[in-house]
Image 1 (tube, rainbow, N blue to C red):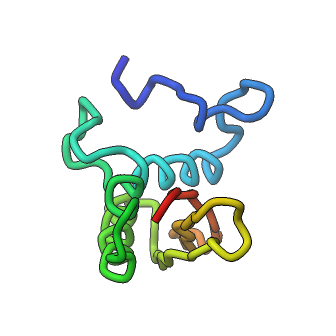
Image 2 (image 1 turned 90 degrees about the vertical axis):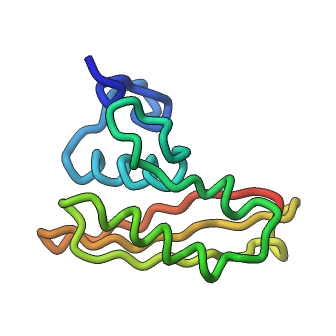
Image 3 (image 1 turned 120 degrees about the vertical axis):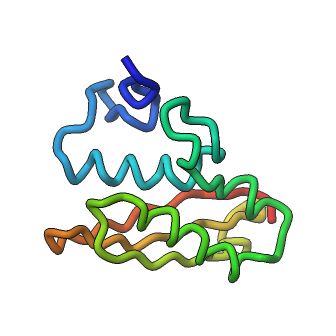
Length: 120
């Protein structure tokens, strides 16, 4: 069993079941790519670009989005990706940013995952 075989909360649905199909699995892998710290995966030390570390307390959101796009493009199932950092401070009770992604698969499917970042 490798580190990627282990299941975490993000890999399970509301009822504790694993990902139902390949598209859902890709979406979870994309979220892992932008939330895992680089080097945290035992079998792939080049995996990850932690949005939490990169964007919390910084104004470098514009430049960071290119790093997230490059990280996601490492997945061979991805044809195209666009990342944006959205400031939700006006509508959220606490200052919050979201990393919003548009991922197009090689089969033409569109995924739109987002990750809340927290206090800017």
